[in-house]
Amino acid sequence: MVTDRIVQTAMRNVIEPIFEKTFAEQSYGFRSGRGCKDALRRVEKLLKNGYPWVVDADIKSYFDSIPHDKLMEEVEYQIADGRILEMIEGYLKQEQWDGLKEWEAEGDTTGAVISPLLANLYLSKIDHEMARLGHEMVRYADDRVILCRNEEKAKRALEEMKGMLEARGLTLHQTRPNSRCNPRGRI
Image (cartoon, rainbow, N blue to C red; front, side):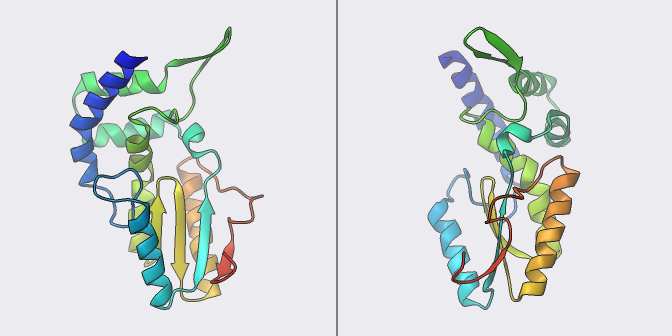
């Protein structure tokens, strides 16, 4: 609905500067002044600087599986205005229709104006924790690569990432071949 998109755009314009201040440097997706080419340049720089082991951490159904309660905790930590909080919660819990079948949405609806901002917010703590642990990584929306100097560090980074995601109610794709460690050239 057009009205819904206008309201979400206005809300995003108000809260985006608040969240943007907290986002990690290695996050590139759906951020003002950053893009896919910037993320690729960082990956290329890390590869050239001796980080040939790549962990491609693909989150399973990310937008569909973000837990509403945990996401709202992140929002409430930075936003105090009850009206904004009610609108975001209402947006997250809006009813979905497929023909005559109705259900309550789970996760963060893909394609909605405010979805990328909320998705970035929910992964931000993981970005900061991975950096604190000394991991070099690049995230574009829900796609993340961690670049490491050797296989041992890559395997450790993958296990640490799995643990952080599980703590936030998310999982890595276990059946996809890209949720593993690869030396450069076999990405």
